Image 1 (cartoon, rainbow, N blue to C red):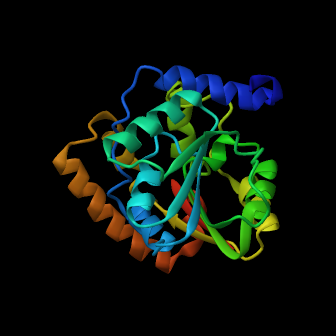
Image 2: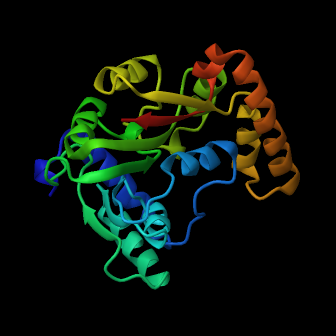
Length: 249
C-alpha cells in the first residue's frame, strides 16, 4: 500500500501505526463538552443512512453510529488503527456492521454519490486538505452532508501550546487556520462554521495533565456556558477558538 502514498501520507501512516501498535481498543466514546455535544446533535438521526466514518481511528464513532441504526463504513490510513477498530467492534458484539477499510482519506475508492452522511473527528487536519475535500464532495450523495470536528490554531495560546508539546501530534498535521477555512469555504460554499472553546483553552491545558479531575471538568463546563454567551455577543472571536464544527452540504 505504501508505494501508492504521498510522502505526507506515509508520514501520517507511520506515526499512527507506531503510536497505536501497543494500545488497546478501549477509548472514551466522544467527548463530554459543548463541542462534542453539538457535533452529535448536528449528525442527528442516522437510522437507515449510509455513513462514512472518515478517519475512523479506533472505531469509536463507527460503533456508536452502527448501534444507532446506520450502515457504516470506516476508513483510516493506519493499519494498526483498523485492527483496533475491528477489536472494538467485536467487543461491542457487532459483526457485519460497521465495516473497516485501510484507506487514505485523499484516495477514496468508493463510487460517486455513495454516502448520505460523512462524519469525522479530528481528521481533516491530518490530510492533504484540497484532495480530501474533493473526495468528500465526490462520494457524498446530492443533498447529503458532512460533519467534522477539528482543532483550530489561530489563537496565540494554542500556537505556544503546540510549540511546547510537539510529541503530542504528528509532524505533518496542521490544525485549521484562516487559509484552511478559506479552502473549505471554496469547496463547500454553503459550509457552516460553529466555533467552540474560547475561554476554555486554559482549562484544556490543565485537563491534558489531569483529564479526570472533577473540579477541572466542572470548571470546563462552566466556561463552556460562558463561551456560548461570549461568542453570541462577539461571533468574530470564533477564529480564536480551539475547536470548530464544520457542517458541509
